[in-house]
Image (tube, rainbow over all chains, first blue to last red; front, side):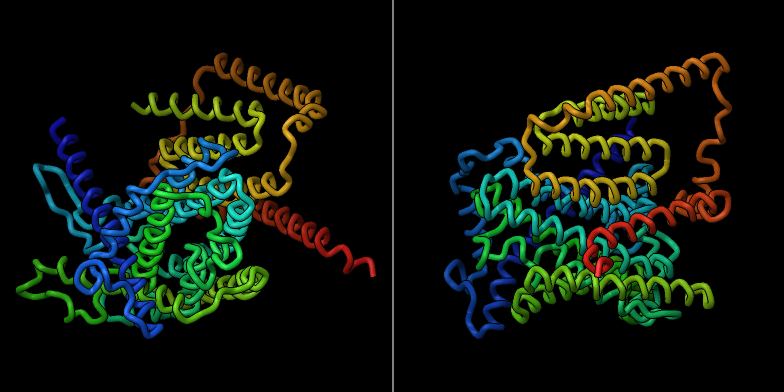
Length: 356
Length: 169
Protein backbone atom coordinates (compact mmCIF):
# COMPACT_ATOMS: atom_id res chain seq x y z
CA UNK A 1 0.00 0.00 0.00
CA UNK A 2 2.86 2.36 0.90
CA UNK A 3 4.55 1.43 -2.37
CA UNK A 4 1.49 2.36 -4.38
CA UNK A 5 1.31 5.67 -2.55
CA UNK A 6 4.98 6.44 -3.19
CA UNK A 7 4.52 5.50 -6.84
CA UNK A 8 1.55 7.81 -7.24
CA UNK A 9 3.30 10.71 -5.51
CA UNK A 10 6.43 10.22 -7.64
CA UNK A 11 4.44 10.01 -10.87
CA UNK A 12 2.37 13.07 -10.02
CA UNK A 13 5.50 15.08 -9.20
CA UNK A 14 7.06 13.97 -12.46
CA UNK A 15 3.96 14.93 -14.44
CA UNK A 16 3.78 18.29 -12.65
CA UNK A 17 7.44 19.01 -13.45
CA UNK A 18 7.08 18.04 -17.14
CA UNK A 19 3.89 20.07 -17.53
CA UNK A 20 5.49 23.00 -15.76
CA UNK A 21 8.51 22.90 -18.05
CA UNK A 22 6.30 22.58 -21.14
CA UNK A 23 4.08 25.50 -20.16
CA UNK A 24 7.07 27.65 -19.25
CA UNK A 25 8.58 26.80 -22.62
CA UNK A 26 5.34 27.85 -24.30
CA UNK A 27 5.50 31.16 -22.42
CA UNK A 28 9.08 31.63 -23.52
CA UNK A 29 8.24 30.65 -27.11
CA UNK A 30 5.56 33.31 -27.48
CA UNK A 31 8.17 35.93 -26.68
CA UNK A 32 10.95 34.22 -28.61
CA UNK A 33 8.80 33.94 -31.72
CA UNK A 34 7.99 37.64 -31.76
CA UNK A 35 11.60 38.60 -31.03
CA UNK A 36 13.06 36.27 -33.66
CA UNK A 37 10.53 37.40 -36.25
CA UNK A 38 11.31 40.97 -35.33
CA UNK A 39 15.05 40.54 -35.78
CA UNK A 40 14.57 38.73 -39.06
CA UNK A 41 12.40 41.58 -40.30
CA UNK A 42 14.82 44.19 -39.02
CA UNK A 43 12.74 45.47 -36.12
CA UNK A 44 12.95 45.10 -32.34
CA UNK A 45 9.94 42.97 -31.47
CA UNK A 46 8.04 43.68 -28.22
CA UNK A 47 9.94 46.23 -26.09
CA UNK A 48 7.34 47.79 -23.77
CA UNK A 49 6.69 45.35 -20.91
CA UNK A 50 9.65 44.88 -18.60
CA UNK A 51 13.31 45.35 -19.56
CA UNK A 52 13.81 44.57 -23.23
CA UNK A 53 10.21 43.27 -23.42
CA UNK A 54 10.95 40.07 -21.49
CA UNK A 55 7.77 40.31 -19.39
CA UNK A 56 5.53 40.35 -22.47
CA UNK A 57 4.31 36.71 -22.00
CA UNK A 58 3.14 37.56 -18.46
CA UNK A 59 1.18 40.53 -19.74
CA UNK A 60 -0.31 38.45 -22.57
CA UNK A 61 -1.31 35.72 -20.13
CA UNK A 62 -2.98 38.18 -17.77
CA UNK A 63 -4.82 39.81 -20.65
CA UNK A 64 -6.18 36.47 -21.90
CA UNK A 65 -7.15 35.46 -18.39
CA UNK A 66 -9.25 38.57 -17.77
CA UNK A 67 -10.83 38.78 -21.20
CA UNK A 68 -14.55 38.28 -21.58
CA UNK A 69 -15.53 34.79 -22.59
CA UNK A 70 -17.94 35.12 -25.52
CA UNK A 71 -20.11 32.31 -26.86
CA UNK A 72 -21.53 33.37 -30.24
CA UNK A 73 -25.27 33.26 -30.84
CA UNK A 74 -26.41 29.99 -32.39
CA UNK A 75 -23.22 28.20 -31.39
CA UNK A 76 -23.39 24.67 -30.07
CA UNK A 77 -22.50 25.51 -26.49
CA UNK A 78 -21.39 22.07 -25.34
CA UNK A 79 -19.09 21.40 -28.28
CA UNK A 80 -17.92 25.00 -28.28
CA UNK A 81 -16.54 24.56 -24.75
CA UNK A 82 -15.31 21.00 -25.34
CA UNK A 83 -13.27 21.78 -28.46
CA UNK A 84 -10.40 23.72 -26.80
CA UNK A 85 -9.96 20.90 -24.28
CA UNK A 86 -10.00 18.30 -27.05
CA UNK A 87 -7.21 20.25 -28.72
CA UNK A 88 -5.10 20.86 -25.60
CA UNK A 89 -5.22 17.52 -23.79
CA UNK A 90 -3.85 15.37 -26.66
CA UNK A 91 -1.07 17.90 -27.19
CA UNK A 92 0.05 17.67 -23.55
CA UNK A 93 -0.52 13.95 -23.04
CA UNK A 94 2.08 12.97 -25.65
CA UNK A 95 4.93 14.14 -23.41
CA UNK A 96 4.36 11.09 -21.22
CA UNK A 97 6.60 8.87 -23.34
CA UNK A 98 9.35 11.34 -24.30
CA UNK A 99 12.75 10.41 -22.81
CA UNK A 100 14.23 13.71 -21.61
CA UNK A 101 17.42 12.15 -20.31
CA UNK A 102 19.28 8.86 -19.83
CA UNK A 103 17.37 5.73 -18.90
CA UNK A 104 18.44 5.72 -15.24
CA UNK A 105 16.57 3.87 -12.57
CA UNK A 106 16.55 5.31 -9.07
CA UNK A 107 15.17 3.52 -6.05
CA UNK A 108 13.00 5.74 -3.86
CA UNK A 109 11.56 4.11 -0.72
CA UNK A 110 11.83 0.70 -2.35
CA UNK A 111 10.11 1.80 -5.59
CA UNK A 112 11.87 1.60 -8.96
CA UNK A 113 11.63 5.05 -10.50
CA UNK A 114 12.81 6.42 -13.86
CA UNK A 115 13.30 10.16 -13.41
CA UNK A 116 13.64 11.15 -17.08
CA UNK A 117 10.69 9.45 -18.71
CA UNK A 118 7.19 9.47 -17.25
CA UNK A 119 6.23 6.14 -18.77
CA UNK A 120 8.32 3.91 -21.02
CA UNK A 121 5.58 1.97 -22.82
CA UNK A 122 6.56 -0.44 -25.55
CA UNK A 123 4.49 1.27 -28.27
CA UNK A 124 5.57 4.80 -27.26
CA UNK A 125 5.74 6.35 -30.72
CA UNK A 126 2.37 4.90 -31.74
CA UNK A 127 0.89 6.30 -28.54
CA UNK A 128 2.01 9.79 -29.54
CA UNK A 129 0.69 9.38 -33.09
CA UNK A 130 -2.64 8.16 -31.73
CA UNK A 131 -3.09 11.18 -29.50
CA UNK A 132 -1.92 13.78 -32.00
CA UNK A 133 -4.51 12.43 -34.40
CA UNK A 134 -7.15 13.14 -31.75
CA UNK A 135 -6.04 16.78 -31.62
CA UNK A 136 -7.69 17.30 -35.02
CA UNK A 137 -11.10 16.84 -33.41
CA UNK A 138 -10.65 19.94 -31.29
CA UNK A 139 -10.02 22.00 -34.41
CA UNK A 140 -12.80 20.48 -36.52
CA UNK A 141 -15.41 20.63 -33.76
CA UNK A 142 -14.34 24.11 -32.69
CA UNK A 143 -14.83 25.25 -36.27
CA UNK A 144 -18.19 23.56 -36.59
CA UNK A 145 -19.61 24.55 -33.20
CA UNK A 146 -18.85 28.26 -33.65
CA UNK A 147 -21.73 28.69 -36.13
CA UNK A 148 -19.56 30.83 -38.36
CA UNK A 149 -18.62 30.35 -41.99
CA UNK A 150 -14.98 31.28 -41.49
CA UNK A 151 -14.63 28.87 -38.60
CA UNK A 152 -16.29 26.03 -40.50
CA UNK A 153 -14.06 26.54 -43.52
CA UNK A 154 -11.00 26.63 -41.26
CA UNK A 155 -12.13 23.45 -39.51
CA UNK A 156 -12.72 21.60 -42.77
CA UNK A 157 -9.39 22.67 -44.19
CA UNK A 158 -7.69 21.51 -41.05
CA UNK A 159 -9.40 18.12 -41.19
CA UNK A 160 -8.15 17.47 -44.71
CA UNK A 161 -4.70 18.81 -43.94
CA UNK A 162 -4.19 16.89 -40.72
CA UNK A 163 -5.26 13.58 -42.26
CA UNK A 164 -2.99 14.03 -45.27
CA UNK A 165 0.09 15.03 -43.34
CA UNK A 166 -0.41 12.66 -40.44
CA UNK A 167 0.03 9.86 -42.95
CA UNK A 168 3.37 11.31 -44.02
CA UNK A 169 4.50 11.70 -40.40
CA UNK A 170 3.63 8.07 -39.74
CA UNK A 171 5.35 6.77 -42.87
CA UNK A 172 8.44 8.94 -42.40
CA UNK A 173 9.24 7.42 -39.01
CA UNK A 174 8.80 3.82 -40.20
CA UNK A 175 12.37 3.86 -41.54
CA UNK A 176 13.69 4.77 -38.09
CA UNK A 177 11.57 2.06 -36.50
CA UNK A 178 12.96 -0.48 -38.96
CA UNK A 179 16.53 0.44 -38.03
CA UNK A 180 15.90 0.64 -34.29
CA UNK A 181 13.75 -2.48 -34.14
CA UNK A 182 11.53 -1.00 -31.47
CA UNK A 183 8.59 1.34 -30.99
CA UNK A 184 9.73 2.56 -27.57
CA UNK A 185 11.28 6.02 -27.68
CA UNK A 186 13.67 5.04 -24.87
CA UNK A 187 15.01 2.10 -26.87
CA UNK A 188 15.16 4.13 -30.09
CA UNK A 189 17.26 6.77 -28.34
CA UNK A 190 19.52 4.15 -26.84
CA UNK A 191 20.14 2.64 -30.28
CA UNK A 192 21.81 5.94 -31.25
CA UNK A 193 24.49 6.15 -28.54
CA UNK A 194 28.09 6.94 -29.40
CA UNK A 195 29.23 9.31 -32.11
CA UNK A 196 26.88 11.45 -34.15
CA UNK A 197 27.08 9.10 -37.15
CA UNK A 198 25.04 6.67 -35.09
CA UNK A 199 22.12 9.10 -35.12
CA UNK A 200 19.44 7.81 -37.44
CA UNK A 201 19.66 10.85 -39.65
CA UNK A 202 23.19 9.76 -40.63
CA UNK A 203 23.16 6.13 -39.57
CA UNK A 204 24.29 3.25 -41.74
CA UNK A 205 23.05 1.17 -43.53
CA UNK A 206 20.72 3.81 -44.95
CA UNK A 207 20.72 7.37 -43.56
CA UNK A 208 17.23 8.59 -42.75
CA UNK A 209 17.86 12.10 -44.03
CA UNK A 210 14.99 11.95 -46.55
CA UNK A 211 12.66 10.63 -43.87
CA UNK A 212 13.84 13.42 -41.61
CA UNK A 213 13.02 16.13 -44.16
CA UNK A 214 9.61 14.56 -44.87
CA UNK A 215 8.96 14.26 -41.15
CA UNK A 216 9.81 17.84 -40.37
CA UNK A 217 7.83 19.37 -43.26
CA UNK A 218 4.84 17.19 -42.40
CA UNK A 219 5.16 18.09 -38.73
CA UNK A 220 5.04 21.78 -39.60
CA UNK A 221 1.92 21.11 -41.65
CA UNK A 222 0.36 19.03 -38.91
CA UNK A 223 0.84 21.72 -36.29
CA UNK A 224 -0.82 24.26 -38.64
CA UNK A 225 2.22 26.49 -38.66
CA UNK A 226 3.30 28.76 -41.48
CA UNK A 227 3.75 28.16 -44.41
CA UNK A 228 0.98 25.58 -43.92
CA UNK A 229 -1.35 27.58 -41.67
CA UNK A 230 -4.33 27.43 -44.03
CA UNK A 231 -6.81 26.47 -41.28
CA UNK A 232 -6.16 29.86 -39.69
CA UNK A 233 -5.06 31.89 -42.71
CA UNK A 234 -5.76 35.37 -41.39
CA UNK A 235 -5.79 37.11 -44.76
CA UNK A 236 -8.63 34.93 -46.07
CA UNK A 237 -10.39 33.34 -43.07
CA UNK A 238 -10.04 36.04 -40.35
CA UNK A 239 -8.52 33.55 -37.89
CA UNK A 240 -9.87 30.25 -39.21
CA UNK A 241 -11.31 27.77 -36.75
CA UNK A 242 -10.81 30.01 -33.71
CA UNK A 243 -12.29 33.17 -35.15
CA UNK A 244 -15.12 33.12 -32.58
CA UNK A 245 -13.03 32.15 -29.57
CA UNK A 246 -11.92 34.61 -26.92
CA UNK A 247 -10.38 34.64 -23.46
CA UNK A 248 -9.20 31.37 -21.92
CA UNK A 249 -10.74 29.18 -24.61
CA UNK A 250 -8.68 30.97 -27.20
CA UNK A 251 -5.68 30.57 -24.89
CA UNK A 252 -6.22 26.80 -24.83
CA UNK A 253 -6.06 26.57 -28.63
CA UNK A 254 -2.98 28.76 -28.54
CA UNK A 255 -1.33 26.59 -25.88
CA UNK A 256 -2.22 23.47 -27.85
CA UNK A 257 -0.53 24.80 -30.97
CA UNK A 258 2.68 25.62 -29.13
CA UNK A 259 2.63 22.41 -27.07
CA UNK A 260 2.29 20.50 -30.35
CA UNK A 261 5.28 22.36 -31.73
CA UNK A 262 7.35 21.33 -28.72
CA UNK A 263 6.09 17.75 -28.95
CA UNK A 264 6.98 17.28 -32.63
CA UNK A 265 10.38 18.88 -31.93
CA UNK A 266 10.96 16.40 -29.09
CA UNK A 267 10.03 13.49 -31.38
CA UNK A 268 12.27 14.77 -34.16
CA UNK A 269 15.15 15.10 -31.68
CA UNK A 270 14.58 11.65 -30.18
CA UNK A 271 14.06 9.78 -33.46
CA UNK A 272 16.48 11.41 -35.85
CA UNK A 273 19.06 13.38 -33.85
CA UNK A 274 19.90 10.91 -31.12
CA UNK A 275 17.71 12.34 -28.36
CA UNK A 276 19.83 13.06 -25.29
CA UNK A 277 23.01 11.66 -26.87
CA UNK A 278 25.84 14.11 -27.51
CA UNK A 279 27.41 14.34 -30.98
CA UNK A 280 30.61 12.89 -29.54
CA UNK A 281 30.95 10.75 -26.40
CA UNK A 282 33.49 13.12 -24.79
CA UNK A 283 30.94 15.95 -24.88
CA UNK A 284 28.91 14.23 -22.18
CA UNK A 285 30.03 14.15 -18.56
CA UNK A 286 32.03 10.93 -18.25
CA UNK A 287 34.74 9.30 -16.19
CA UNK A 288 34.88 10.86 -12.72
CA UNK A 289 31.87 13.05 -13.53
CA UNK A 290 29.73 10.16 -14.87
CA UNK A 291 27.18 10.70 -12.09
CA UNK A 292 26.38 14.07 -13.75
CA UNK A 293 25.61 12.40 -17.08
CA UNK A 294 21.93 13.27 -16.72
CA UNK A 295 22.75 16.99 -16.62
CA UNK A 296 24.65 17.13 -19.90
CA UNK A 297 22.18 14.67 -21.47
CA UNK A 298 19.13 16.82 -20.71
CA UNK A 299 21.00 19.90 -21.91
CA UNK A 300 21.80 18.19 -25.23
CA UNK A 301 18.16 17.19 -25.58
CA UNK A 302 17.01 20.75 -24.87
CA UNK A 303 19.52 22.15 -27.37
CA UNK A 304 18.17 19.89 -30.12
CA UNK A 305 14.55 20.70 -29.28
CA UNK A 306 15.25 24.42 -29.30
CA UNK A 307 17.02 24.08 -32.63
CA UNK A 308 13.81 22.69 -34.12
CA UNK A 309 11.70 25.36 -32.47
CA UNK A 310 13.95 28.00 -33.96
CA UNK A 311 13.49 26.30 -37.34
CA UNK A 312 9.72 26.80 -36.97
CA UNK A 313 10.20 30.55 -36.53
CA UNK A 314 12.76 30.68 -39.32
CA UNK A 315 10.35 29.01 -41.75
CA UNK A 316 7.61 31.38 -40.68
CA UNK A 317 9.77 34.42 -41.38
CA UNK A 318 11.03 33.07 -44.70
CA UNK A 319 8.27 31.34 -46.62
CA UNK A 320 4.92 32.62 -47.95
CA UNK A 321 1.76 30.57 -47.38
CA UNK A 322 0.92 27.80 -49.82
CA UNK A 323 -2.35 27.75 -51.75
CA UNK A 324 -4.72 25.00 -50.70
CA UNK A 325 -4.39 22.85 -53.84
CA UNK A 326 -0.61 23.24 -53.70
CA UNK A 327 -0.67 22.00 -50.12
CA UNK A 328 -2.65 18.88 -51.00
CA UNK A 329 -0.65 18.14 -54.13
CA UNK A 330 2.61 18.56 -52.23
CA UNK A 331 1.49 16.21 -49.46
CA UNK A 332 0.15 13.41 -51.64
CA UNK A 333 2.28 13.60 -54.76
CA UNK A 334 5.68 14.63 -53.38
CA UNK A 335 5.97 13.72 -49.69
CA UNK A 336 4.09 10.43 -49.79
CA UNK A 337 6.13 8.83 -52.61
CA UNK A 338 9.38 9.93 -50.92
CA UNK A 339 8.27 8.43 -47.61
CA UNK A 340 7.18 5.17 -49.25
CA UNK A 341 10.40 4.91 -51.25
CA UNK A 342 12.38 5.52 -48.08
CA UNK A 343 10.59 2.64 -46.34
CA UNK A 344 11.36 0.30 -49.24
CA UNK A 345 15.05 1.17 -49.46
CA UNK A 346 15.52 1.18 -45.68
CA UNK A 347 13.89 -2.23 -45.40
CA UNK A 348 16.16 -3.71 -48.07
CA UNK A 349 19.24 -2.05 -46.54
CA UNK A 350 18.33 -3.19 -43.03
CA UNK A 351 17.88 -6.73 -44.30
CA UNK A 352 21.15 -6.86 -46.22
CA UNK A 353 23.26 -5.05 -43.61
CA UNK A 354 21.75 -5.65 -40.18
CA UNK A 355 22.91 -3.20 -37.50
CA UNK A 356 25.29 -4.36 -34.80
CA UNK B 1 -9.71 -4.92 -10.50
CA UNK B 2 -9.46 -6.28 -14.06
CA UNK B 3 -13.09 -7.32 -13.96
CA UNK B 4 -14.09 -3.82 -12.86
CA UNK B 5 -12.28 -2.29 -15.84
CA UNK B 6 -13.83 -4.84 -18.18
CA UNK B 7 -17.37 -4.05 -17.04
CA UNK B 8 -16.75 -0.30 -17.19
CA UNK B 9 -15.31 -0.49 -20.73
CA UNK B 10 -17.92 -2.95 -21.97
CA UNK B 11 -20.75 -0.87 -20.47
CA UNK B 12 -19.54 2.34 -22.08
CA UNK B 13 -19.02 0.55 -25.40
CA UNK B 14 -22.61 -0.72 -25.44
CA UNK B 15 -24.03 2.62 -24.33
CA UNK B 16 -22.13 4.70 -26.88
CA UNK B 17 -22.79 2.16 -29.64
CA UNK B 18 -26.52 2.58 -28.94
CA UNK B 19 -26.15 6.36 -28.91
CA UNK B 20 -24.47 6.29 -32.34
CA UNK B 21 -27.70 5.08 -33.93
CA UNK B 22 -30.13 6.68 -31.49
CA UNK B 23 -28.93 10.28 -31.51
CA UNK B 24 -30.56 12.65 -33.97
CA UNK B 25 -27.60 14.94 -34.59
CA UNK B 26 -25.02 13.21 -36.84
CA UNK B 27 -22.18 15.15 -35.20
CA UNK B 28 -23.12 13.75 -31.79
CA UNK B 29 -23.34 10.28 -33.34
CA UNK B 30 -19.81 10.62 -34.65
CA UNK B 31 -18.64 11.80 -31.21
CA UNK B 32 -20.15 8.85 -29.40
CA UNK B 33 -18.46 6.64 -31.99
CA UNK B 34 -15.19 8.36 -30.99
CA UNK B 35 -15.79 7.57 -27.32
CA UNK B 36 -16.58 3.98 -28.29
CA UNK B 37 -13.34 3.61 -30.25
CA UNK B 38 -11.41 4.81 -27.23
CA UNK B 39 -13.04 2.31 -24.94
CA UNK B 40 -12.42 -0.53 -27.40
CA UNK B 41 -8.77 0.55 -27.35
CA UNK B 42 -8.96 0.43 -23.54
CA UNK B 43 -10.26 -3.12 -23.78
CA UNK B 44 -7.22 -4.05 -25.88
CA UNK B 45 -4.93 -2.51 -23.24
CA UNK B 46 -6.46 -4.66 -20.52
CA UNK B 47 -5.71 -7.67 -22.76
CA UNK B 48 -2.03 -6.57 -23.05
CA UNK B 49 -2.43 -5.79 -26.76
CA UNK B 50 -0.99 -2.25 -26.65
CA UNK B 51 -0.09 -2.31 -30.33
CA UNK B 52 -3.65 -3.08 -31.34
CA UNK B 53 -4.93 -0.38 -28.99
CA UNK B 54 -2.69 2.28 -30.51
CA UNK B 55 -3.52 1.19 -34.05
CA UNK B 56 -7.21 1.19 -33.20
CA UNK B 57 -7.05 4.83 -32.15
CA UNK B 58 -4.79 5.90 -35.05
CA UNK B 59 -6.79 4.20 -37.79
CA UNK B 60 -10.37 4.46 -36.61
CA UNK B 61 -10.44 7.53 -34.40
CA UNK B 62 -7.66 9.44 -36.12
CA UNK B 63 -8.41 8.81 -39.79
CA UNK B 64 -11.73 7.16 -40.56
CA UNK B 65 -13.88 9.07 -38.11
CA UNK B 66 -12.33 12.40 -39.10
CA UNK B 67 -13.36 11.59 -42.67
CA UNK B 68 -16.89 10.81 -41.45
CA UNK B 69 -17.05 14.15 -39.66
CA UNK B 70 -15.72 15.84 -42.75
CA UNK B 71 -18.48 14.33 -44.89
CA UNK B 72 -21.20 14.99 -42.33
CA UNK B 73 -20.21 18.66 -42.09
CA UNK B 74 -19.98 19.09 -45.86
CA UNK B 75 -23.29 17.41 -46.59
CA UNK B 76 -25.06 19.05 -43.64
CA UNK B 77 -27.68 16.29 -43.56
CA UNK B 78 -31.21 17.23 -42.49
CA UNK B 79 -32.06 15.57 -39.23
CA UNK B 80 -35.42 13.99 -40.05
CA UNK B 81 -35.06 12.12 -43.31
CA UNK B 82 -32.07 9.95 -42.65
CA UNK B 83 -32.68 6.62 -41.04
CA UNK B 84 -36.30 5.82 -41.70
CA UNK B 85 -36.12 3.94 -45.04
CA UNK B 86 -33.35 1.76 -43.65
CA UNK B 87 -35.32 0.69 -40.61
CA UNK B 88 -36.69 -2.69 -41.88
CA UNK B 89 -33.31 -3.81 -43.19
CA UNK B 90 -31.61 -2.67 -39.99
CA UNK B 91 -34.13 -4.49 -37.85
CA UNK B 92 -33.68 -7.69 -39.87
CA UNK B 93 -29.88 -7.56 -39.59
CA UNK B 94 -30.11 -6.79 -35.88
CA UNK B 95 -32.36 -9.80 -35.38
CA UNK B 96 -29.89 -12.10 -37.15
CA UNK B 97 -27.00 -10.85 -35.02
CA UNK B 98 -29.00 -11.16 -31.79
CA UNK B 99 -29.88 -14.76 -32.66
CA UNK B 100 -26.24 -15.47 -33.32
CA UNK B 101 -25.16 -13.95 -30.01
CA UNK B 102 -27.79 -15.93 -28.09
CA UNK B 103 -26.88 -19.18 -29.84
CA UNK B 104 -23.21 -18.66 -29.07
CA UNK B 105 -23.96 -17.78 -25.46
CA UNK B 106 -25.98 -20.97 -24.93
CA UNK B 107 -23.41 -23.08 -26.72
CA UNK B 108 -20.71 -21.80 -24.42
CA UNK B 109 -22.66 -22.41 -21.24
CA UNK B 110 -23.31 -26.01 -22.38
CA UNK B 111 -19.74 -26.92 -23.24
CA UNK B 112 -18.30 -25.23 -20.16
CA UNK B 113 -15.54 -22.66 -20.32
CA UNK B 114 -13.37 -23.06 -23.41
CA UNK B 115 -9.68 -23.78 -22.84
CA UNK B 116 -7.95 -20.43 -22.48
CA UNK B 117 -4.76 -19.93 -24.48
CA UNK B 118 -1.76 -19.32 -22.21
CA UNK B 119 -2.51 -15.63 -21.79
CA UNK B 120 0.30 -13.24 -22.52
CA UNK B 121 3.06 -15.81 -22.09
CA UNK B 122 4.28 -15.41 -25.67
CA UNK B 123 3.35 -11.77 -26.11
CA UNK B 124 5.09 -10.60 -22.95
CA UNK B 125 8.29 -12.49 -23.69
CA UNK B 126 9.09 -10.70 -26.95
CA UNK B 127 6.62 -7.80 -26.96
CA UNK B 128 3.27 -7.89 -28.66
CA UNK B 129 4.31 -5.88 -31.72
CA UNK B 130 6.85 -8.55 -32.65
CA UNK B 131 4.30 -11.28 -31.94
CA UNK B 132 1.72 -9.71 -34.23
CA UNK B 133 4.25 -9.28 -37.01
CA UNK B 134 5.44 -12.85 -36.63
CA UNK B 135 1.95 -14.33 -36.68
CA UNK B 136 0.86 -12.10 -39.57
CA UNK B 137 3.67 -13.30 -41.82
CA UNK B 138 3.53 -16.99 -40.91
CA UNK B 139 0.21 -18.38 -39.69
CA UNK B 140 -2.06 -15.77 -41.24
CA UNK B 141 -0.02 -14.93 -44.32
CA UNK B 142 -2.75 -15.88 -46.78
CA UNK B 143 -5.61 -13.88 -45.16
CA UNK B 144 -3.19 -10.97 -44.79
CA UNK B 145 -2.37 -10.98 -48.49
CA UNK B 146 -6.03 -11.33 -49.40
CA UNK B 147 -6.86 -8.34 -47.20
CA UNK B 148 -4.22 -6.22 -48.92
CA UNK B 149 -5.60 -7.28 -52.29
CA UNK B 150 -9.09 -6.18 -51.24
CA UNK B 151 -7.69 -2.81 -50.18
CA UNK B 152 -5.97 -2.51 -53.56
CA UNK B 153 -9.27 -3.20 -55.30
CA UNK B 154 -10.91 -0.48 -53.21
CA UNK B 155 -8.16 1.95 -54.16
CA UNK B 156 -8.54 1.18 -57.87
CA UNK B 157 -12.29 1.58 -57.48
CA UNK B 158 -11.84 5.01 -55.94
CA UNK B 159 -9.53 6.08 -58.78
CA UNK B 160 -12.00 4.83 -61.39
CA UNK B 161 -14.84 6.74 -59.72
CA UNK B 162 -12.84 9.95 -59.46
CA UNK B 163 -11.35 9.77 -62.96
CA UNK B 164 -14.43 8.59 -64.83
CA UNK B 165 -13.89 11.07 -67.64
CA UNK B 166 -10.50 9.49 -68.43
CA UNK B 167 -12.05 6.17 -69.32
CA UNK B 168 -14.93 7.46 -71.38
CA UNK B 169 -12.90 9.16 -74.06
